[in-house]
Image 1 (tube, rainbow, N blue to C red):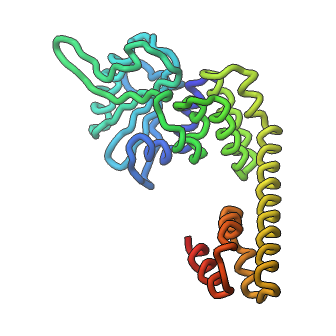
Image 2 (cartoon, rainbow, N blue to C red; image 1 turned 90 degrees about the vertical axis):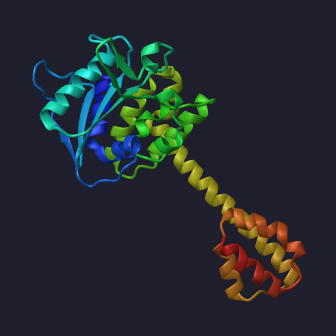
Image 3 (cartoon, rainbow, N blue to C red; image 1 turned 135 degrees about the vertical axis):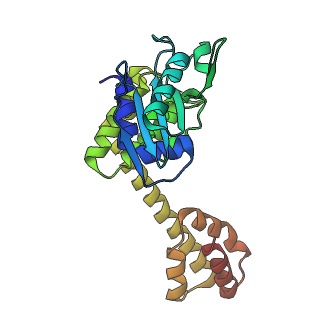
Length: 274
């Protein structure tokens, strides 16, 4: 399966997410258009056309900067053909997947002496990883985003993939993610973080660790409270038991400053609402 084809599959399977990312619009009325326009056939492995209300979003994924015809001219060509066939506004976005210094990746306009035509360019290596890590549709693109620590980024990606509850979806997204990550990282590093068994073990381990830390923090707080106030009413204990690990740690630091049960109740009321 080609890199471009994976991106096309994602855009057409999750059109609302791509529209939200690229157009910042929410729409329930989105239609994937067939890549069939008059004259010459469309490069269907890399091009997606989404009709959103009365606008077409044309997305083109590029791994390489060299193409025939060149990207700027192809954007003009597609624009004219789309407007002629559908007669609606067209937003064109070229997404360059692999980092490059080639000027084509920084060109957003076709120009000759008779005409000019503008389009948008997204360079994945400049994108903030946050929106990709928190969205299943965009997650396979996350390894290509900006980072100062490849290991940390791949670890975050692995955690996000492993949290996908549906097994089939998780396996598909994991496969797409691993393939796209190959554009940027060495195979050994990818497998270190993105193999299915490692992701599952990592999530399970983190869950066990967090629960263990929670129990230890609760046990420590109950010991301090018992030592300071003796027997404590069960209603107070129940409130303490609902605290998160970070809140229990804060309570442990605050206990020495709490001089009465009333002060404790006031502290709980204030911190449970945060």
